[in-house]
Image 1 (tube, rainbow, N blue to C red):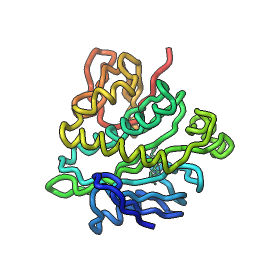
Image 2: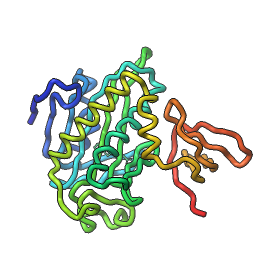
Image 3: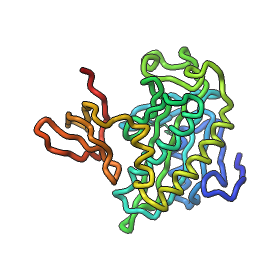
Image 4: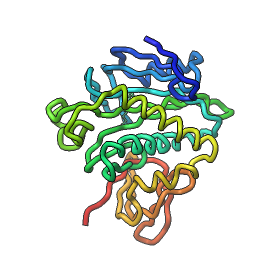
Length: 256
Ligand code: BTN
């Protein structure tokens, strides 16, 4: 089913499916064939929901939000990862309305509540020699999952809005609010770049001054996080006091 609704950049046209392999895969396919900026592919369930690093994203029907937004920002390829951070701020604003003061954005693409993952963001890009052709911004938010709905190996590390608030929430209402917030923050990003997003991101990231470890493939870097750079990379001061900029990896805060 396809609906056309608003004059807005985001969500003017929404393509709804009851089941897809992955909304990112379908959105990418359609974007290659010209699907315009702001179109959204959304599914009630995914049979091959995907996360970063080839992880799977549990995607049962009737429970959560799985959606992918086609973006065509006029930016260089090196700025594309900033779209993930922009979306993190939008989702954090959204969830903070339900769980004030509890939402953390775990750089670069996870949203946590009470230390458990409630949302993952997967951006995929097609580029050409002149820059970004399109970006697929994929967002999965656990809305009405109960603890028992999660695969057993996820129960200690994943959560949902229902678990955190104690009540189910209407998925479509949440989707509508999410589109408005992406509209807002993507507009800021197009005007001002990541510098318009940075303060909001920092306020949700809760990283500064913390001892962290960043793992990227076989490389492990440790040190104290000193902030987020103007391009969205993490700034880390290592044991020798050398300041390093880190563009990719999985971050964890070290205890003690
Ligand atoms: C991650 O945590 O590594 C990212 C998870 C992203 C999941 C969403 S659900 C909608 C979209 N379609 C996918 O296959 N993945 C993203």
